[in-house]
Amino acid sequence: MKFETQAIRTQTETTSQREHSTPIFPTSGYVFDSAEQMRALFAGEEEGNIYSRYTNPNCLEFEEKMKLLEKMPYAISSSSGMASIFSIFMGILKNGDHLISSKAVFGSTFQILDAFLPNYGIQSTFVDAFDEKTWEAAIRPTTKMFYIESPSNPGLEVYDLSVVKAFCLKHNLIFVIDNCFATPYLQTPASFGADIVCHSATKFIDGQGRVGGGITLCQEEEHFELIKKFQRQTGPTLSPFNAWILSKSLETLAVRMEKHCANALEIATALESHPELNWVKYPGLVSHPNYELAKKQMKLGGGLIAFEVKGGLERGRAFLDGISMCSVSANLGDTRSIITHPASTTHSKLSEEQRLDSGITQGMIRLSVGLEHPEDILADIYQSLEKSK
Image 1 (cartoon, rainbow, N blue to C red):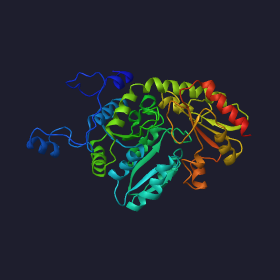
Image 2 (spheres, rainbow, N blue to C red):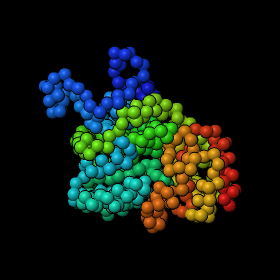
Image 3 (cartoon, rainbow, N blue to C red):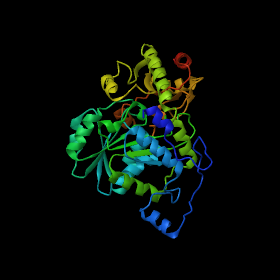
Image 4 (tube, helix red, strand yellow):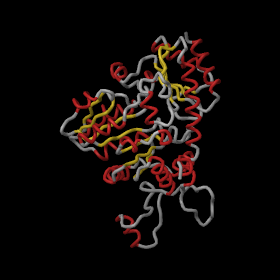
């Protein structure tokens, strides 16, 4: 079946009530037919539900859909994207291990790598994901993993996944990618050799800013079992209700992403010539430094645009204050357009040097393009640019 059909027609087995839509299973525990069945389930000899911290029918349906869409054999959901990312590191790496990460990552991911993992004896080195010399220089005997985002948050850098995979094969590294911005509709990193793919399902997968959730997908059963063991014992569980919402949301992911991308391309093209902007970056623009690579790896350019207002930090804040229709929020991937100033919000915990090293300037604006009419989105941006001059 094609992407859209898999997203719609994959669901749990119909109950005796003959429902057409999957019901929500809001239960913390499950009953067993016998002591032997209970023993076999806990021993892993029989598949089935034990406790909703472990599994739940709604979570399993969401995971099954994501496995099909990402073309990967193993998946485990979690309460948030950051819970999934942290579980990857803590489930697989151990005291004394080292990993390489692109400099251009989400602020919370940077904090985990830079501030928290060292407390567990796990070290990280941040590299320029376009400069393979920095990758080689970062390699240690204890290096186990290479972590990237593509497109990156918030600078929309696009990295060559095949090159990253070749490097990982050369040094026997686990290739991990956050595919949140592209979603499986626009990009399937497994096709380019990724070993582990993660998402903040809170974003485009939900698509309407309603619930939090995350998911990790693996090519290797060994990696999956390690992450699953960590999550089951520490408890970053996705709730049945949130899993139900996310699974239903996948049914409209394809049509939503088509519209997000069409709107984003129209808006990015219009903004390129605006005199109050220093630059505009969007993977679907010919002017994007990795436009050809984005065309090769992604179906469309995505729903995010980055641009820099003239006037730096104060102008960036004034621009946000001047916004009328669009939402000023730290979220993204919503039906409603959302504008964020990364230097003072999502990446504010980084030093100025760290932000610049990640390509985040003081005047950078991140626009998550919604499903409103593009002319209305542009009109709001134009009036705020004029007001904030």
